[in-house]
Figure 1 (cartoon, rainbow, N blue to C red):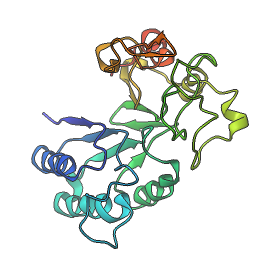
Figure 2 (cartoon, rainbow, N blue to C red):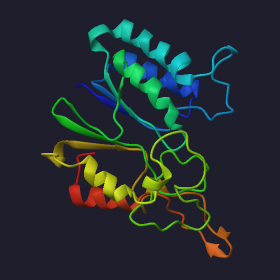
Figure 3 (spheres, rainbow, N blue to C red):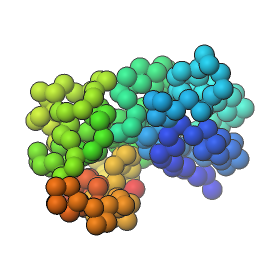
Amino acid sequence: MASWVFASDLHGKTERYRSLLRIMAEEIPQAVLLGGDLLPHAMDSSWSANPDHHDFLADFLTPALQKVQATLGPDYPQIFLILGNDDPAFHEETLREGEQRGLWQYVHGRQVEHLGFTILGYNCIPPSPFQLKDWERYDVSRYVDPGCLSPEEGRHTGGLEARDLRHTTMAQELKELSAGVADFRRTILLSHCPPYDCPLDRAALDGKTVDHVPLDVHIGSIAIKRFIEDKQPLL
């Protein structure tokens, strides 16, 4: 039976990618879904010993997948990927180049059909304490948890302008993303952020406070939780 493979948060760790490439070569899945946080952190150069290598996508992942593509030929799986909150938006240009080469499809903000299934891609997360804000949005309102920075603050390398971020929520974007979907029973939501208040979104924040305010140990998205409960996608 043909398989689909999902992986997320590989963070530019080459051993994790090589494990994924081995699975692709051995199982020959029909599709591979990559759920964001694909790239190493800006100061992490451990993925290559070559001092001329600076772009993980161009210098590591593209040639690695080209080898798999050449080996598998027509059995090369469709790869659907999104970015995560640790992945700067300026990498979208390289992702578009890889898509033109047939290596993958970048599906953030898109509906993509594959083998009778609809894949919805979505990079974004609610406000976090982190400085990179390319893929952060207000969740269902302009509320920001204690210790977090609003999407309008921090550092941006692309994405929405600050004036648009002020009036944009994840709930609104998910509604726009899913408009026109015919059958959610055959729909896969490929999102970097997990739904709020579940085992997937629990952070190690027990007993921690900011200005004497207890921190919520659940860091997922209320908008994504409501979307799943309302639309009931297959996955």
